[in-house]
Image: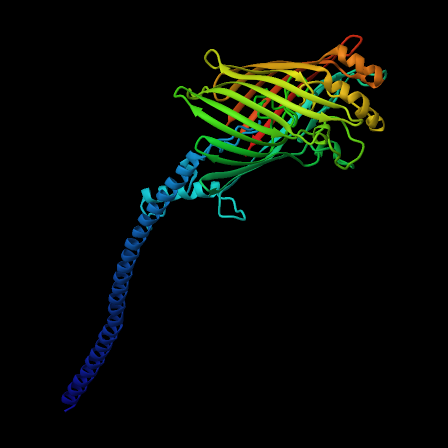
Length: 522
């Protein structure tokens, strides 16, 4: 009985254990199945979302490529239009200056790569080049037409032996009095130039454009730093109308009958040989230019009127009429030139005639006149010969000869008695330059010049005005320089200049300058 009960109890216990184990296993299995089902559902949903996103990305990429192709077509059309209008514009022959070539391009490896997930490599390069060109030329202005800013930041350091009329840009040697220093040393940024060039609309078939140049040679302000800072000065301001073979130019301009000037980065504020044979003084001008092509050369006829400024110091700060303005007539001038069209070695030879009526205080009337010859011709390979020669009288307002240094307290007496006598004196002068261009980076220049007045005429005028005994009848200059351009936007130029200024009596006065110019073109 006991044995049967024990066996029954043991069987019941085994059954309970078995049941408990089975229940646990069942619960574990169900729990495992319940946890696996949402994971598989989430993975399926994620795959579906990625497929949808990929389809949308492909659609956007296709649309972006289509827009890029349209943009390329539009930019190419705009470039063709801009290139066509630029090629028709006649280039302007201006002073030094200047020079506004773009800086050397940055290597492609330093630029960020194209976003490969958006556009192709070719599309990216084209778009990047167009954007860079657009940003380079973009200058905001008050009109829809193009405006270009350029300039030359120019540093000049110089050592002068002797005494000169202007420390920054010496043009004449002056005698030294007892106790004065035998020389001087200095530096300046006053010859830096800032320019603006703009193109305008077509007016009845005439293409319009204008340019303006400013430097810092308008005088010396008072106070600390005044000797090196300088005052802002308007150099040139011109408006052009161009049509086919005809141009009309109006504004403050260089004398069109004296288009050449020696090459020097130590003399930009006042051109080299300003009192030694170079007619240069910038004047309000209106001129008409007509060009005639003959195949191998181009003939040019220029005619215009000018209003030159006075060359002596006035008695007040307000503007008084000059002898030319008092005559109520402008300067009349005409120039005929032959210009070669041979590639990168241009040549020109021109002759000019000038008539200059003047009325002075006291009623004296003098008819000034002059003739000028200018040239720029290539000689041997890499060599160019240029220069100018003039003769006449009454052309003092355009420079080329020594300037009379008149004190303001005696200016009225000078203007009434001595100035007409000086204007009647014969003038003769000129300069020549030999340029040797080794390559785009290296250039050498050697130039000589002289400006003369008739000493007998000056001596007769000195009888009426004794101060003219100090007026130099003759001035000579020699300069030698080397120009090194390591980049298109950077230059260095050491220069040596020798001045010899004569007087009516006694030995000539000598002075020299050794200088270094360093400029950044932007």
